[in-house]
Amino acid sequence: MQHIVREQLYTDVVYRFKYVASFVDFGEKDMEMIKASATHLAPLVPAVVDAVYQKLFSYDITKAYFASRMEGFSGKTDDLSHLSLGSEQIAFRKNMLSKYLVKLVTSEFNEAFIKYIDWVALIHTDNSNKSTSINVEFIHCNALMGFVENVLIGAISDLPLDADTKKATLLAFNKLLWIQTDLFAQYYVWDGAEIPNARANVKGVKHVAETARTVAARSALPADSTTSIALASIAALGLGVVAGYLLRQA
Image (cartoon, rainbow, N blue to C red; front, side, top):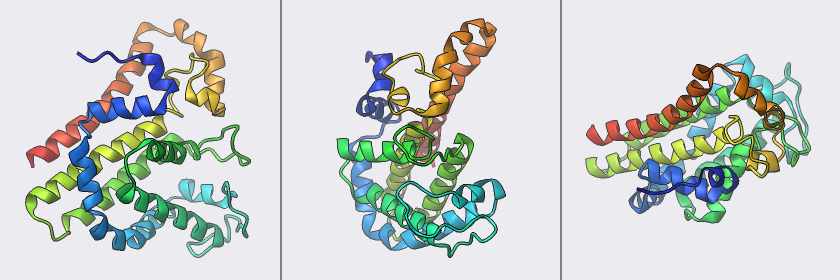
């Protein structure tokens, strides 16, 4: 039985990545399958990016986030009434998403990569390291990751690969995207907020900091409430394992 240090899950992103990767059985074979898919998937990146932004623009609640100036963008920012898929700030964001997708299939799965996908999660929060105060609520991040996975499954399913390779590639991406989603979750849930050097606290994620100041109130919650919070976190991770298992049986 492996011993896992709970506090380190919240203070050490590499340790956290390795734990979740181990839990969902993401290993060397998966990394090889993802990198091997690069030549097939790279040409599809523009279409995937367009599909993502068409989806984000199909709901007013998600489109509204793009009317605010993004961290690192210095160009013209259209207000919501003039915002379109052709706006300058959308071209900037599309470029960033394109780079992210390329990195997923070309990077070595080393510490630099782990810190990059962690940054991708952090940049969506209102934190003390940003000059902007945009905070994309987790429900939208989670839904988007589900949509991206759906698009990738469709794209991989149409690739000219033998059945075993196609299945292994699908499994690999399923695991990787669940790991990415966990890195988002670390900055939104209150788990670990009582640890002073938890990464969400160190990075100054504002809603987590507020939670940290009131985390003592958890003791006043009914026992069923605190139990349900813990079970929800376990259930989310378990769903990734179940999804991977069902794909293996397909």
